[in-house]
Image (tube, rainbow, N blue to C red):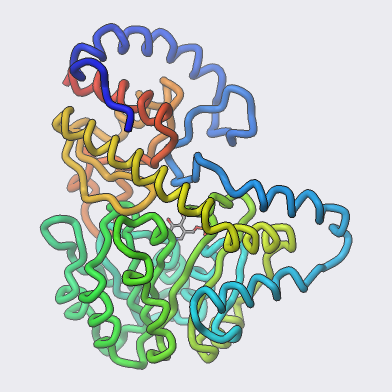
Amino acid sequence: MKKMSAPVSRRFEGFFTIAFIASGLCACAFAADPAPTYENSPIRLSSNENAFGYTPKAKEAMIEALDAGSYYNRNNVSELVALCAKKEGVSKDYILTTAGSGPLLMMTALAYAEPGVNVVTTEMGYTQLIRKFEQRGGDVKYASLSEDMGYDFKALGDAIDENTKIVYICNPNNPTGVLADSNALKQFVLSVPPHILVFVDEAYLELTESSFAMATCAPLTKIRKNLMVTRTFSKGYGLAGMRIGYGVAHPDVIELISDFYMGPPSYLAAIAACEALKDEAHLSKNVENYQTVRKHVCDTFDELGIEYAKPDGAFVYFHSGIDQQLLRDTMKENGILISGSRVSGVPAQKYEKWARVSIGTMSQMDEFLSLMGGMMAKK
Ligand SMILES: Cc1ncc(COP(=O)(O)O)c(C=O)c1O
């Protein structure tokens, strides 16, 4: 692993001034947040995109299939469904593919929400399902986190009442990055009354330090009817732009949310996802990259005296002691996009000096860490 050659504080001397001058140029170069397909685009460490890239086999297969674009090509999605079912050890009617996993979160909210009912979730979690549930007139009940920003299953259980329709758990959590203890999570899932849907969002689970097979709740869908587990090809597999993901659930749950289905993913995305699933070596390499770079970020944060929640996803949630907006603005002026405190279920002030940085390549993270060091030294 790449290590710093000089003590952190010395290495940052002078850098901040250069970065400050450069910031004027960068600021002119991009007004909004352009995609990396544009020239001079900033370093994107804000949306948990995969900087290591997807399998070249997916690219080859998509190029080969381009000429078939005038046909619906439903067989490609069928092939993907079969591969997903095999991976999850379930039958094909347990799988629903969508354009990214986001649609599954929203379809579920649409299917279950109405005035007078609630969704229970952790504070400081991912809000795509939550927001949609609220938009449809439902309520949200937030359970507090544990001391280390992990899950408090007692608090989650206590928040459930007679109006609860869904319990939404993101594992590893976003923005905190913390992974649940797999036994505690599974016990909790099995303890929730069967008329309530437990929704486990495993968007980042491939990237965890722990065993994926041990940590996933998908096998429980075979014994627990009211459970939905979602996966995406956007993160570990690096196919965010292709828009493809899937849910694993009992066919009755799939049928219920399918009232809000907006159609299958594109055949090219399905082709790419099939290749991604087959290329296990590429996924392993990507996971290794994430783990190596994530450790490097944590080691450097330790040197800089920056506190962080234990990260197991594609990002690190950290406490710099610098106002999150100032930190984001300064980073942006210097060509780096990071995310802010992303509070939910708590007053914004509680995390106003926290921010989230996505894991990029080692050199991208070193640019971020250099700036971070400069800012910490000036605090
Ligand atoms: C926890 C979590 N779930 C789901 C999603 C949705 O991602 P996608 O629609 O690309 O699968 C995201 C996106 O960042 C996420 O962070």
